[in-house]
Length: 606
Image (cartoon, rainbow, N blue to C red):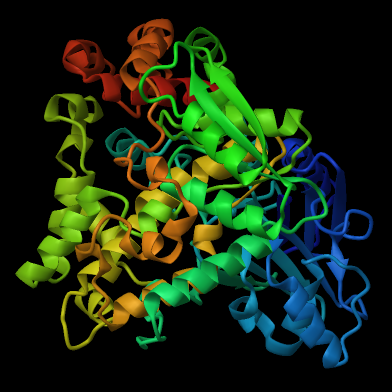
């Protein structure tokens, strides 16, 4: 796990380019406090900060193939590296380290850019091919690891493409006077509480989409990303008993992700998903897993510490509880927003931040998470209802757009009036275009029909894909990466193991309508015996702090940032007069989003 950055230019690099790259790299020391590395050629240079997790002594990057014609830096973990290593060595490759990342360069020797299809894990990498004088950037299928891209020109007119693991580190390259917040992205943020990928809140900076690669060369800086994976492309096959299949694959995922050369813990709540990951992992690594749980001052009804503690004791794993004090949380809010890198107005950020802080204090640099269980196994009732309703009505792409409009839209007309001319944007249509767009240019109806050509609108797979490309990617995984990396913690997500995701997608593409079954039927049928009734039979709660109380305290303390002299208004991305006039009508949630956006903007525009 680390942070990566780099530059490729259509003219030879200058010392000033390398100085800027080193500055960007240093800005990500929190992502990799253990070491750094740099590689440069005539037209390209790349750097990294390393958090040592696998092969502590020998895994320093950049890493190379045998003749050093290939060089790579990578952020993430390749979970199937042992299997890949054995196969590569059997075919004559000479690997010099035990690093998971080294397997990528040797796979590339055989398959070129197609090597990404063999990688199971979370990753964003940059690979320089000296023989072809080209750079390959790749990002994992689900988007667990970020990779930002920016095009600019040097003072002499030479064109450059920069890439980086974090937005704010990349902004070191842009003088404050030239930084511009995207009105469209801010509109998305105030609507959804996050902005949609592949865009960003800064004009001119985007992300490489999940499941894509891009190949650049000094003479070809205008290349387009290439999609190498989609869950809707998974072949529809029966695959045998779905319960047995999920049981085997999730068990394998926990075994893979629980393996590291450093201590491993789990972010444990009292819910089904994290409890299952804890139970399965404890079987593979008895006495080695350390559980960390969040609680709230005063122990309100939503406090899950006691349930989590009883379960941890039953598993015989170490247990640490962290109590969040609302007053402390309010005062440290600027630190939290700064750590977000890109703002996400999810109150759950507080819990992620504190559980990762506790893990770092306990010297446990790897945490397992139950994230993804709700998104892939129908934990949200409103999502189940959407999938079920669309199947019954036989809707096509129009049905998905309607679902987007109903399920994901927020913000009243009064609230959105602060955007002036942007207030008339059809946000649902804009989002549905984003969801239904295909990098190959396939029309929306065909994109949906690919999974079940004879059935028209494949409600389960399409709704899962939509949820994964919005809420899971732009809210949950973004927060998980930034909050963990703020404390130099690697967060691993067994429910997003790609073999498991592919298998479930394949079963649904064939016609498995498990959203019509009882709550989390497939998961509980596979592993329910590992959970006590107080966990398996509880109504879904999620991360539920005293939300209203916390938001009120935060708004009371920090909303003067936008109520008085709003930076967003002074920079022209919202209408200051409408902001002042409409503020009394704003909902609590909208005020919270404005507070997060304003605090973030003050950090990046100054």
